[in-house]
Length: 121
Image 1 (spheres, rainbow, N blue to C red):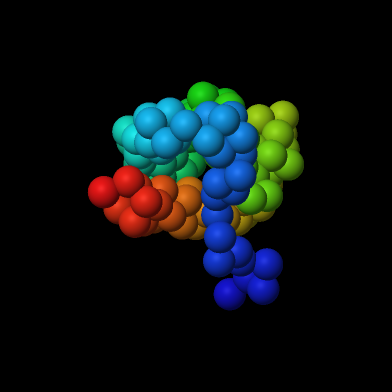
Image 2 (cartoon, rainbow, N blue to C red):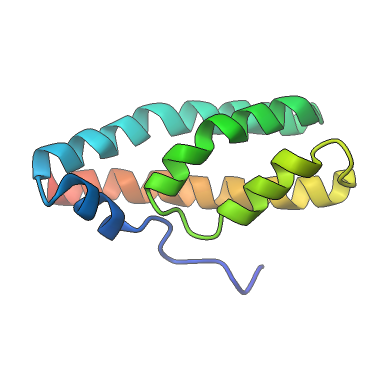
């Protein structure tokens, strides 16, 4: 297991700041994340299984703004590398980076779900 794995995947301070503490807005943003990211995560897994480098790049490009908005830990640099080097990066390295992103996204989805359940229901 990677020693750098995080117990926290999202930075709720970003959401609180952007929503200016408005709980209705915060809930709206969290639900948008819940609607968009799981579907794109499944697309990413499929593209990885098919070794479809171009599709991986397109999916990550679409997700990047939301991931940065939510302060997903340590995703900016790997996504930038995958976007820029998707054609030339060795397949093994591409797999490692994408699998690490998948791990972080699954953790973020779980955290968002728990946040909604504990703070808004």
